[in-house]
Amino acid sequence: RLTSEPLAPDGTHATRPDNLKDLAYESIRGLHRALHEGSVTCVELTEMFIARLERMDGDLACVISMTRKRALAQARRLDEELAAGESR
Image (cartoon, rainbow, N blue to C red):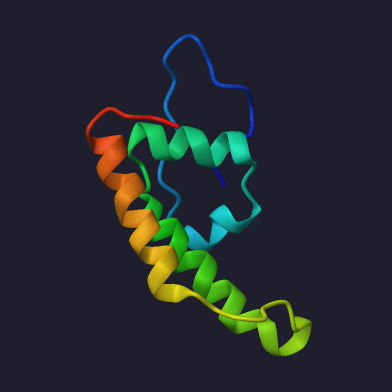
């Protein structure tokens, strides 16, 4: 798990977890930090969360319509924006 501490002004960096599934429990701040530091990509997070939804949907019935292609296309665009120095 990445740290869920506030973004540090001292330049400390988030590290990539050994298992991306651990990021399912990360805070939004921690995910933001990991994305902006390049330790994980939007596509990787999207693929991990889609796999998690598919794995758990049978028990939870939490997905009405899976839009895998759309989600991955949006993730690729966001990765391109981050690579170009753009941030939302």
